Length: 161
Image 1 (cartoon, helix red, strand yellow):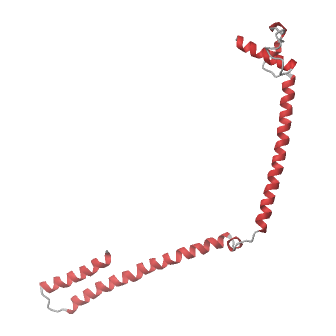
Image 2 (cartoon, one colour):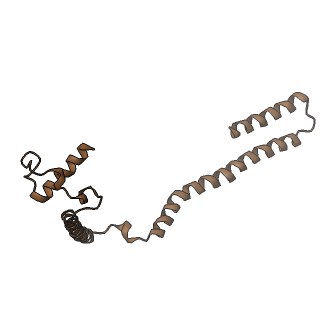
Image 3 (cartoon, one colour):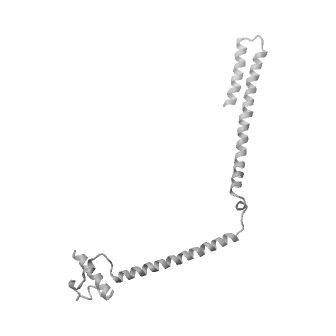
């Protein structure tokens, strides 16, 4: 409590006499001379004035900074405008997307079509050839029949792996 009292006294001395008159130089001021308003939470007139000046300055500074920012942005935009535009900037966004879709999608589409139709067709031909071979043979023994089946299975095994 005593430290707080000393601090308040020192602040009051500074306000009244300036920053040079601190506790060491001005011992004549006692606690009886300090007004009760020092202990209240509301700021004094000098503090209010200082605060108002600060806010005014800050506002002005803000405006200046905004102006500088705007000017800087304008310069950058001008510079960007002077620079030659590339081809990508001229084409609209949706055209770019469609172009990329075609470039990446076309090979994929061909691979899928090739895999779905051509490979399936080769496997189907192998199966039908095996069946036709079985039909052509009239009297077939067990051994020959197994041989043909193994050939067909081996052929299918190669294509499915």
